[in-house]
Image (cartoon, rainbow, N blue to C red; front, side, top):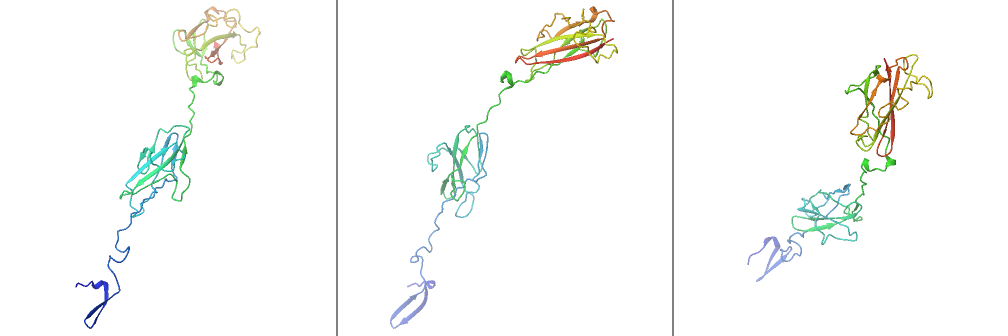
Length: 298
């Protein structure tokens, strides 16, 4: 008979009998001693620092734990459902995988409940929809409704600002700007650059430009003080205030960007030494703006 010394503390020989007094036991008589450790399921945790930007969701499951040895988990699977009564992820399709995935394409205005399922290296799983391990309410997100901006040209007419007029005065036949007129000079007036509040060309986008003007005699020759309407200082016979522009008040369009101003017919130098050109632009929304330029005539 072979004795297990570690299982016996005393051997007593009494007569012809051998008596064994045991003070320990082997694995066959000790209940749980020696058995393999019991597998524990992992704990899935949806971290509270998830973020929703428009229809894009960033979620985090890094607080999930392997309860056995603390090692990293083998798999993270994420599920989204519009069924807010759902209590587990059974039957739901996987929406994303990984510790911190980004989910796009969520539908504006809808609510989704989030589930996280984790699997450890032994194949044990846990699935949760709560935001932490204390059993808080399920994580439910609401995708915001983002109003799309209305294109400028699609705004109602009353929401448009007044257009911006740009008056160009060139030596006729050129694009050379002038700041002083000469008697007998020939000039071209243009509204190129005038635009509506959508920054589109006035004459090329359904609007028009109208020119007019006035001429008068300035005593000091500075042209700073324009006479009041009806003042006899105005030179009315040929220059301005009487539809002098030819053709008078013709709207300028994309095919007619210039209108002529010929001071040759205003040959009486003693009658005027100042000319003011005014231009009114009207956009296709019905809004108008006027600008003026004043010139000395030498």
